[in-house]
Length: 562
Picture 1 (cartoon, rainbow, N blue to C red):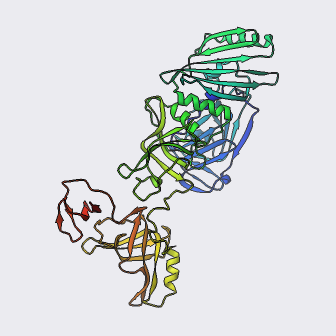
Picture 2: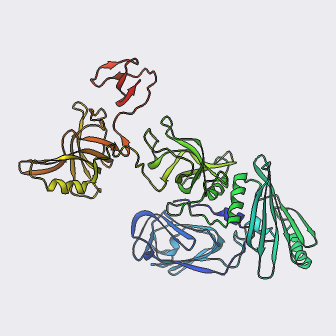
């Protein structure tokens, strides 16, 4: 990823959190499965390290020229990063090959960054960088968010750790309140965080704190007063043991779903994920992440979000192939994230016969998110899909096996069955074989069949030939590009040990069926065809008009006209 997930919202959310003692997290190449010229990510103790389009061996991280390495912490801030490289300074592979980053210096084989941030990004600019070890330090006793965060600079409660709280929302929806308890080494305080909204946007945040003594309250009042002229604080008052601070900056550009999810995460101590396939975001986290983008901005990298369907606005249908629904952590219709106009499994349009979604289904969404009109965090229209539905990444209720009595096998199993046959013999029963197209011999629209080879894996040497197969309905093929090399297919037919000139060819016997290509049926699509000026043909190749009833061919596709 050239850009990595922004976690600046964590600093906003954790208004009451203070730092912890420093902790070192060591990343070693041996922690990874070796990879070549690809993105790779490792998460250790709440810190994710992501490298783009580069290589890792058992002894080196190799960050290629013009590629990036990013560090993201979901807990305490990153305060230090040390690279140990294989070369000195600005020499090729050395730490000086990174582009300039504030807080980064290098000497000899070591490059050191110091700062206070949730995210840190380095780009190999002058040459490739090779590191044998990377040590990331999180926490330093400082407030998460860093010295450049106005919400912690101006917050007199920032020296306290959040302990517990409750969430409530006014009946008119214009106010959110969190009653909290926070502690430090000396005292426990209680108070409220109140967020006011107008037109769906936060206008101010009022934080009050009840201290054990008037002396402690006065000390915090004086500290707050010293910050009053700084951007963000509107008023500061003291009433006995209670100090109240009203902030009108920092939150006033955030929408209600963002604040609501932010506070819910605080109250529930929800940790969330990194937005990756292995560590998806929660719906609350997605609301905050997307909602902190600029108005109508779309984040340019795919993220993963996991939740349960709480409500469905538009279920999938064959006309659009997409759906609109809301997900939450528990499937309840509150604290939801909107999945807007998303595609089905495998990033494909939903078709009749696919499994329909329902409330309570567990899904993982993959795609781009946006802040629609600045007040609605959601997936960008038709730029996201259901990666997983109740743990399945493919629709097993689809057309892969229309006849459950026919056994489904892999190419390797089919080859074993054929090998046991006598020369020239064919099995008495049919099989359904799944595979990947490795070569295409011929696709003949004139004869209505296709001949091609399939394998289990792209590197397999032994292939199974599919000989003169027809479509899923046993009808002639009308699409001269029905299969291509690399397509995932399922075919059905008898298996044959074909022999000619002493050469043995294992194959799916002639007149087998191509059931699916990349999960889509090759047979008749049963839909109602609206009146159209497109030319229609029947299965005999005769031209027919819109009054013809039955199977027709339109633009090379079969369908039923009613």
